[in-house]
Image (cartoon, rainbow, N blue to C red):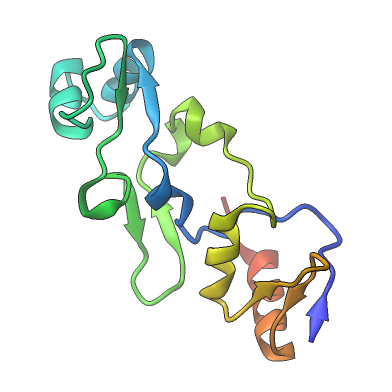
Length: 140
């Protein structure tokens, strides 16, 4: 079965984008993140940024285990969560889910779905309905 996406694809919290990209933060963003985490900036930089990046004016968020350090898998679900979502960096805020993004397509595979050449979701009726119901109930 296939179904057209009548609206823009919302984020369905698969977390694939958080495994593919290392977010860059400026000095001021690093300070804001540190403040929200009740840390001194130097402690934030030491514990949450990639020591391999030689930046002095910007920093890369650390990716231990091949995912953003702030990404959490929600046990027993297909969902991930972000420990800093409410105060996430601008790079994260700028991410827009789209059926043309390979990360979103990989995320759909978690649901047994795929996007066909016509840009429509393909999968069993049951999988498509389950995904649609999920989208209707997800909170951000």
